[in-house]
Length: 114
Length: 113
Image (cartoon, rainbow over all chains, first blue to last red; front, side):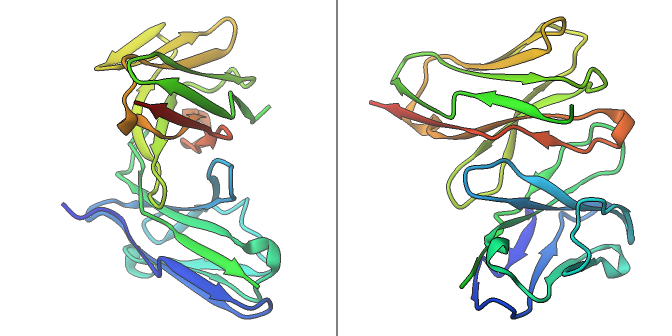
């Protein structure tokens, strides 16, 4: 069974440029998460989707970050414009709906902003 | 109150030794405590998890010890192997907040032969 797929794996951009990350969750998983992982830190939730609906985006910096999950499957996370402090690993995870369902993480996209 | 404090930041253990990682939390509404293992270039993967109705859970060489009154929990890796070298994260969540995982800061474990 394929796991969570993310692309690109690495991205290097200059500050003020836009960037987008793509995530394909495990088939059948209705819940999708985007996490930010800074170097030497644990992941921090940015946004959580139940199907197409964003049910928790309280930690998403909405002035520059946006996300969408059209048709309740794939998702994209966008940053526009990127800042130096956005350099980090962006992780996507998915799970079945329901309390206590295990979250399966993708390999992440490592973003470097120069 | 939403934080999970993890220690040590790094740990070096000889092959065959016991690795112990500790975590502490404040929010008594947390009711699910998973541990994740992350290898370089990979996403975290669930290793073992516990709920507060038990004080210990064992899966193979991995054991979680849970102290509800002290609001602490720990991961014990018995007979540590070089293949266990990775970063370990504790986390906590509660059904009250739709299972939003709060992660610790991670422990980098190195097991030498």
